[in-house]
Length: 142
Image (tube, rainbow, N blue to C red):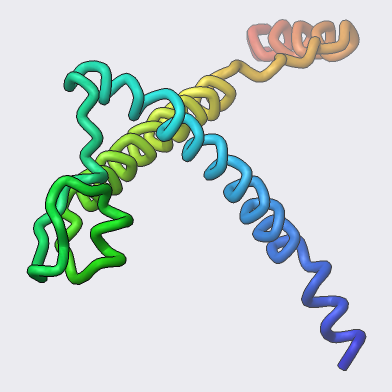
């Protein structure tokens, strides 16, 4: 059973999948940082400093209006539509960044596929034999 597991674990597809998951997690951290630290501040600056994440509708009379969403959740039931908008914007940005990365990778792949293969030089002996064959074929038959 141990031998069978070793064969399974060291199979190429499993190792490729593991590497893909690890790289995906690292790439996810980079994209998350780009969204939170680069794009969302720009969106906030364009919208006049709006922070959608603190928009909510209180469902309980215990919840005071005007407080941060996290504090409002502690006091009672609230609908955090601003948090939903923020997460939806984050998703759209992440999806767009991934689309651009995959598009660039596909262009690189297609560029590699279109590269002409190097044509091997025909040896001189083969060229001469081809010429002899052509001369013999062109000779009138007697």
